[in-house]
Image 1: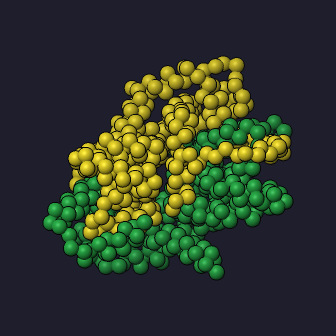
Image 2: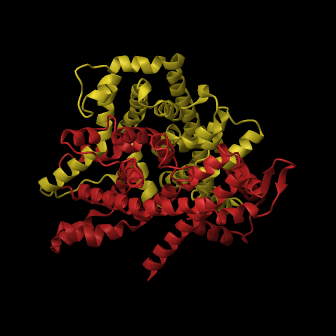
Length: 293
Length: 313
């Protein structure tokens, strides 16, 4: 599957300057806000207002800003960062494992209700997640789980799209003959999954994991409605709260603005790095998702 | 796939099978249940139970005296006549009609340009366009909010330098366009990568044959590549419909910058959120969520129906 994605083209046509310039201009538009973020993170709040936004000022204040961000409100930003990491890793890891198990089960076993259950899950892909968030909040507050980490992790474990992708992967990457051979050798079904199948599914698993990671990392609506305690916030909700305080105070409290900006920069670095290093995986994953549906 | 295994299953059925084979098959089915059970249990608890509970909940009304009272479909009749809700739905429809075509055309153009092989620095430009997808929507909105802003936004600064005033990006006339730009910035690269990946799976022999027949790049793009992308474009479209109608993060965050422009019912999702968490009208908010879900489902299915019929013709 990975190899079909990247095919060498035999005839290399000549390069086009016009197209290159057009594409570079487009890339510049998409990178401009990020460049601004880096520049703005390096400024004091006075320079932010008094110097031109798209270039550095004389005073390079990035490290002082980072220190301010990390120590504001007794280091609550680090707490938010830790929460985000905890929610994203547990929800994405658990969700990807559940999707892999079920994708394998639906693809390789015959049992009553297989098709019906799969179709129900498939239909769930279409249900808007935010339409589900308020109902989930109602249930969680009824059973006393609202305003706990579980309120973020448990709903994020359900990943219908991940199941869909995993099923496609299993069909493409796990041959029946291999399973039969393992069974003849006397391996149990569970052992076959963990020692044979999971290894074959590694690229697909990584793709589902990465996208689930991004999804939970970026999640805003669910934690916003579930959590009251600032100690439990993920970064998204925390930064939005700082921004709200800054805007409510108007120009008078410019002090929070550099923190919002520097905090934004700090929180996008891990994901950007993850995407750059795992390119091979997510690109092949998207091929499967886009083509095989 | 499933259909073929099922027919095979039916053919095998009447054949006399030994007791051990039957036992084996039963054991296999049990293992199948075991593999899907964890997912299905979580799915049941986190997906179906909340939906059913909220459906039940939406049939009641909280009253000062007497607590929760069963009111049947009253919340739904109220929702269908609620002008605020439908103004919001009309607004996201307008948003969808403006933003999604521009985004998908741009994503398609980028993908086709990259696929011609005529672009230098291909990897760099592709990654540059995709990177915003890795930025959380909240942070994208905060950044663009600062960029649009009159205080230290570069647009306002540039305009001031040449003695003009910058357009009021956060004013009532431009707000929807400003929001559309943020969503465009976030998701164009994602759509481009999907389309680009789909293009790569088209066999190159077709292009070579077309080139031998004298077709230029434009002709190849129009007559071969775009038709080959139909499926991938449909996927992008469905995701865009769902995304546009659920618009929440961007307007909710912009509210603090432009409280007079973005009211509590600016988008249907924002309305449901404010009903539940500001107005404490949980029952009605649940009904509004269902109505919104229904609108999205109808929209998605209408789109799929329309495209299916056209391709069958």
